Length: 77
Image (tube, helix red, strand yellow):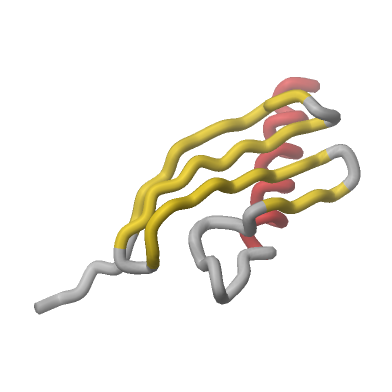
């Protein structure tokens, strides 16, 4: 049960980080975000039309989540 609880904590923290996104950098979450022992790091390249990024979550200095993402505007012509 502890493993399931920890997974829920990871994703609860991820939601907090994603809500802290800025208007100037609207790709997933902010460049960095901290809350107690939790730390979110987001590296992104590109612009709103096309971007690629990688985000990580650390708990007490240990990497516990990592993923790549891509995105961009889709315009109907």
